Amino acid sequence: MRKKLLILIIMNLFLAGCWDQHQLVNKTFVNGISFDLTDEGNVQATVRALDIKGKGGGQFEIKDELLYAERPSQAGLAIDIDSMVTGEVDFSQAHILLIGDEMAKNGINQILEPFYRGKESNITQKIAITKGEAETIIATEIEKSPIAFFILQSIEGAEKTSYLPTENVSTVWTKILTPGKDMILPYLEKVEPDKIRIAGVALFNGDKFSGKTLSKEQSSLLLLLLDKLKVTNRMALILNQEPEKTITFSTRKMKRDMEIKVDKTSGKITCNVEINLQIEVISYPQNFTEKINIKKVEKELSIALTKQAKEVITTLIQANCDAFGIGMKISSKHPDLWKKMNWDEEYKNVQIEPKVNVKTIKTGNLY
Picture (tube, rainbow, N blue to C red):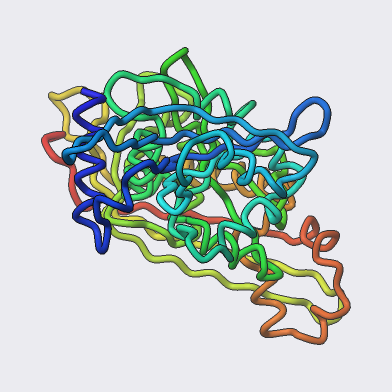
C-alpha cells in the first residue's frame, strides 16, 4: 500500500505544472520537517523525505527516509541535510512543519522566517505543536501512508469540521507580526507506537507557546466563540453532571455578537461574546414513550455550554493568549489608550463574558 501511494505521489509531481523527468532524477523531496530543542540547548531538525533516483529507461527507485541534523541554532541545518544525500534536496514540497513543545516555548518566529521568505518555500504548509519531541512523531512508521501525509489529512479534516483553526505558514507569520492578536495551533500527541492523534490546540502569546492547551472539544467551542464555524461541527455533552444524560449534537448555523467596552475613567476593559447556535440533536437518551421536552433541553444545553465557554476563557487568560484579538480592536478604536498600555500585562485584567444560546432546528428520529 505504501509503495502504491509513493508512486501516486510521484505521478502527481509529473502532472503538477512544469515538472519533468530531468528535474526528478536524483532528487530528495521533503514532505515533513520537525524541530526540537535538545537537552544541550541545540536545535535538532528531522526531515521526512522521498529519495528519488533515476535507474534509466524512465524507471525510478523511490525510498522513504529520515534525515537528522543538529546545530546550536537553526542556521545551517538545511545545508547539513542537503550534504547527506546525493543530488538536490527540495524543501518546497514539505506539507507539514512540526515543532516540539519545549522548542515552541522559546518562540517559533526564527523557525518560520526561512519558510516564509524563501523563494521555493511552501507558505501553505501546515504547522502543528507536538506533546514532547516532534521527532518521535515525524519518525512514526504507519502502514497505509507516509506519516507526513497522514498528519496533513488529519489536520485538514479537523479544519473542515471546525475542530481546528485553518492556519498555515503564511497566516501564522501574519499573526506573529500583528500586535494585539494571538494564535492557536494544532496540538498533536503520540498515543501508541504507531498512532498519532489531534489532542486539541496549543495557545500562544506572541510567537511563544504558553504551555497551556485546550482539548479537542474545548477547541471546537472556542472556534464557535471566534465565529469560525465551517460547514458544521459536532459535540457531545453531559447535562447536569448526569452521565445518563449525554447529548450529541451538531451546529448547523450560528450568529455571534462581540462587544468591547472601555471605561475611560477606570480604564477597565470588558468583552461580551454572545453566540446563538442552531443545532441538530443527533442522540439523546430518553424514555421513548414520552415526547422530548425540547425547550428544557435547549435551556440545559445553553447553561452547560456557557459554563464550558467560561472555562475556555479562563484558560485563555492564564495563557495570556488574546485569541479574540481584543488588543488589536483597542489599538484601532482607542489608539491613544493603546500606546499607554503594556498589553501583556493588561490583558489578564480584561473581563471576558461569554454567553451561549441554543435553538434546536432538527431532532432526527428522537421523537
